[in-house]
Image (tube, rainbow, N blue to C red; front, side):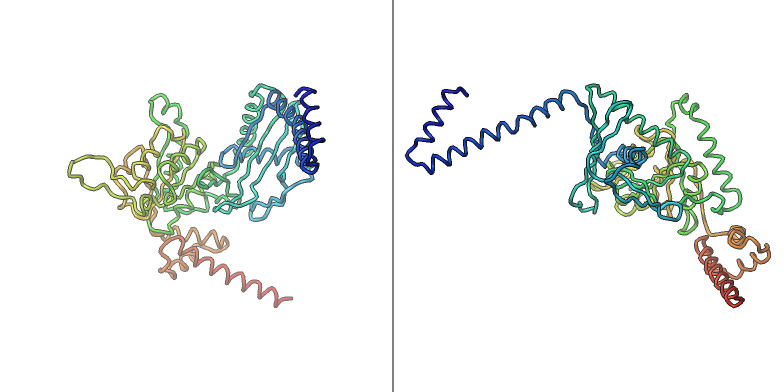
Length: 419
């Protein structure tokens, strides 16, 4: 805009016939010019930020979000922050009192370079009662390799910290999250029929030692275990005990909440050498995994379910598909093995079947001795014989809990009387 044009406009405005309109127009022009020049510093800043910085965004629907969150909370810098959120996960049978970064911008030096981290949280909750969160990391430079190396280091530190800790992870619908309330169950607390546990452990050990053989043979390196039997026989407890024994991460999938694509995404994002639990697979497709119906055209393809839901073919593709994580162990549970399609029971999908039926007297006696270690075998056997209605291990455990409570109450009463 030349000086002559600006002078002409100013003269016209100031010497117009309508002084009120002229004054208002002048203010509008001045305001527009001021607003234009006011935006220049921000434009310059954005230009330099675009040219001389690199940034990386991580949303809470990505597995990396949990890595970064854990890493950020364990930085030395986090001990000096003044803007924090309360973080009280339930671990080891108690609440852990700790603090974590609150929404806002934080920065510290990392590898001799300032690293800025902006943590944001949505103001409103979604239908899932969850506020969306995200991290944005940025620093000076133009080479994205710096941020990639940070992500690699964060993942390595996260995996190292959790290697020796059995962890339970659940699928939220878009990503895996850690269930902090999970307490691993010791394997020796899971009492199975004599010999069953040893056979199962031997098979898992053999599988874990055979990675090279699978690779040489060109066979997909994963294994499927089917735990079947009536409710309350210890199927879920067995998986928890095995995870504790092998210090593995357990990924629990609720099939009745899955579609083919969601199940594929969930399994693909599970870690290698993980234990993936598919509970109640007889209820996987529209309430019941459908048996193959006889086709008039004699085709062998499984019957498909309605679009959008989980189908039998979708489940089969996950169990032996190309995207199945290397070393994954699938633990499928069912109360009704007779409802399962024959295709699901083929080797490669179901490699080992473990039947867990009604509790034997030996199992009950062993559990009694765990509850009351000072008692003898005869006392245990007498109690077992007095509880014929306790068919499953869950039923018998409930009987033991009632006995233990009465025993504790009587002991407490005697102690009070003695005082």
